[in-house]
Length: 122
Image (cartoon, rainbow, N blue to C red; front, side, top):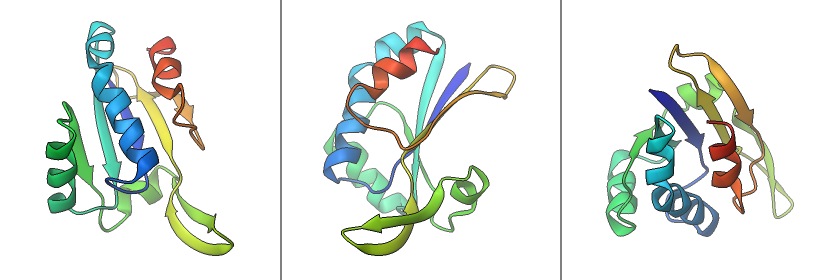
């Protein structure tokens, strides 16, 4: 199967919730295209369980508390948060083909319309 691996900053925040719910609501279309969705953030498993249950998410969330995966994918970056420089996940999505090769990368994702863009590339 193809994998839609999306990195997001934090569970249960407005943009991240909107993005997760958009993937949830389009899951039938994603499955039709032969893909699965995996979300990943630096939140712990307890946070993921709460977030997933609260919004009835129908895909897996992975916990990258030690930031190892985020760093390897190049999405753990310095960001400007209300004038303060902080480190965190830059919202990004990777489409990985059946052979495990990255087919498409979306960086600095704008949540609005993002899942439609992903669907076009599956």
